[in-house]
Structure formats: structure tokens, C-alpha cells
Image (cartoon, rainbow, N blue to C red):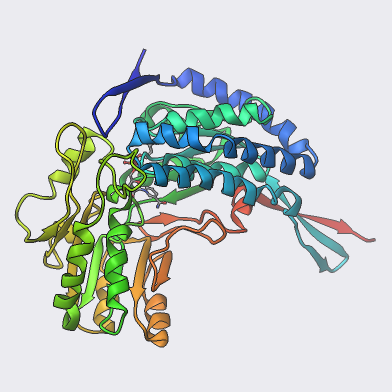
Length: 452
Ligand code: NAD
């Protein structure tokens, strides 16, 4: 019987084991989900809405428990973990309005009338990475359930505990049995079966670009819809006319939040050459003051990396070949701790082009607006990014010029559940969140009514 031993990344203590779901068990779960989905879709919309509101309320009553679980399992700072659990509640609340608003069109045509319906897909498989186990799960399962589907959720190997608890809370809230099943296990077994099983009618995959391509190819074999939320190497562009103090004080949080294990991390800091020295002077104290330490401490801004293996992957990028501008601090002793690190690479160095997924930022100077846009776009990725300028026209021009799915001007905001989220280029395919997300879990059907 295979299982994963779970380790607290802050102190390397073993916190438990989780058994892997087998292929046969996945297939049995799919069969149960098919039956549960039919009954769910047949409920009156108001009853599905009420059930989702109750699920949200049950999550709300367990925010602290979920947050504490995430602190132990993922090493997230407690303040961040509370926000993540609260995000699941908020996203469920937001989409609880959807069952009663899946409205079609009526289209006058010759000889009668066309009416469109948004029919649920059936069973949806949601595959989640380890970096934000709760929010990323919720962004998939909440709109999918709201649209009348059943959901099978596969958490990442190392971070399944909050997902398992959310599955229990769904049942406690009264959500029908087997409608929302959490299946921990290997990506190559459970996740892959979502792709190959014909009765799983859509896959929502969030994770690396490499695995995402594999999932997309597998889904193509069955013409199965897929949402892909993949890697990033996002640019934080600071123009000379910006509020440099504000841009510098926010920059550490924009890349070191969640120890840089954030698809939206602004891991390329593009600074106009004429203010580079001044900006670095402002950035240094902000980085040194970024509080890295005990995740249970309310004041902590950054915890450890998620695992030993991931720590080694990130550390391999810091091989001494690229000048280090300065670093922050990190605790000694057990745990996968790494200090926030600011590098001064050339534009073609590996650290400046590849996703590191750790607390490492590359500072790259640029000359003018055109150079900034070209540099920001010189990437296979296009997920997120920030633009700092006091010139409104420039803010608009650059935001339109940067090939990225989620941008913020004079802020580092990334994901807001009321707005669509997703990447350009190899950062992804499709959009999560926003008011239209439930429609992505439906097929649109048109029915012609003859009036003759
Ligand atoms: P990963 O691709 O290794 O794994 C993601 C999930 O896919 C895990 O649950 C894993 O078990 C599963 N998986 C692995 N192999 C599979 C297969 N063959 N078939 C189906 N499922 C499989 O990614 P990770 O290391 O867990 O996460 C980090 C990556 O996720 C980074 O690249 C990051 O940028 C990306 N990410 C993207 C977003 C976004 O919204 N764009 C959000 C968070 C993370």
C-alpha cells in the first residue's frame, strides 16, 4: 500500500501519513460521482444555491482549524493561511448565486425560436498543486458544483490535509454524498486517471507547464475540455516617474509571499535604468526587514519552502554564477529555510528566464517604455505582473502591451475572485474565477422551437 509521509516544513517533524488512492478506487469514485451528479443537477436551482451557502458557512466555522492544518502541512504563515481558508468560504459564497443565474438566450429565427441552455458537464476532475492547496481547490470546485457538476479533487502529494478536511466539511454541511470527493494520491495515478477516464468530462489542472502539456495532450485524445493554470515569470515594471517608495516597499511581498512559491510571483523586477541605484537603495531595507520565521507567529511574512526536494531545486539556481545584490534573513536549524535573495543577472541568465518558485528575484534594468514592454514579453510565460508609474497614459499603454493575464497598476494585487484569472502563452489556457466561471463547466445547448 503506498502512502506519503507528511512533514512539517518549518521543523521537519513528521505530522502523519496519507494513503494513496488506487486506480480502482478512482474508477469507483467516478461511478459514484456520476450517480450523485444526476441527482444534484435535478435539484431546484434554489436548493443547490442553499447547499453551497451551507457549505460556505461550514467552512467559515472552521477557518481557524483549516488555517492551523495548513500551517503544519505547508508551512504557510498563520495570517496567510487564515486568508486562504477565508478565500474558500468567499468563493463558495460568490458562486452560490450562480445556480439561479445560469441564464440562456432566446434567439428569434425564421420559423420559430431558438433557446439556449447551459447543461452541466457531469463529473469534473480538479488537480491542485501544493503551493496554495485551499484557494486553488476552491477556484475549481466552487464554480463546477454551482454549474451542477460533481467534483473529484486531487490534492498535491505533500499537502493533502486541508483538501481532505474540506471534503469532510462538505458532507457535514449537508452536501450530497459522493458529489464532492477528495482523492489524495499520485499525479501519475489519480490525476492521470481524471485525464483518461471517459466519464470525467473536464479537467481543471493547476501546476507546472510541463505536466500541464501532458494533461492537455491526454485530454485531446478524448476532446475533453481542460483549464490549465500553469507557471509564471512575471514582471514588476518600475518606471522612473513612479512612487519609488511605494513600489520598493511592496516589491518584497510581491515575490517573497508564500516563500516565492506563487505562480503570480513578480520574480523579474524591471527597473528603469535612470532610477536603478535609488530603487535598490529603497529595496534593500524592505528586503532585509521582510519577516521570515515561525509560521505560527502572527507577525511572520514568509515561512519555509514546502519540502526538502523543493528546497534543493531552488538552491540549485543559487550556484554563485550571478551577482547577489543583497539578501534578507532566515532562521537556522531544522526546516527548509531560505533567505529572500535579490540577484543582478543579465537578461539571458537562467535565473532571469526560468520559473524558480522560491524567494529569489532578478533585477533587470530597462531604458524606455518600449524596452520595458519587450523585456516583460520576452518570456514563454504570461501570467501576472505589475506596472508602477504616475503617468496614467503610460499605465494604460503598458498594461495593454504586456502579454499577461492578470496585471495591476500601482499595486501588486493578483487574484480577485470577482474577476477572471488565467495566463497568456505557456502560463495557461482558459480562465478561472469571475462571474462567467460556472459557464466554463457547462455545455451550451440550443433548442429550436418551431412555431408552425
Ligand atoms: P506539478 O505540475 O508537479 O503538480 C501539480 C498537480 O498535478 C499535483 O497534484 C500533481 O500530483 C499532479 N500531477 C503530476 N503529474 C501528473 C500527471 N501525469 N497527470 C495528472 N496530474 C499530475 O506542479 P507543482 O510542483 O505541484 O506546482 C507548482 C507549479 O504550479 C508551478 O509551476 C506554478 O507556477 C504552478 N501554479 C500555477 C498556478 C496558476 O494559477 N497559474 C497556481 C499555482 C501554481
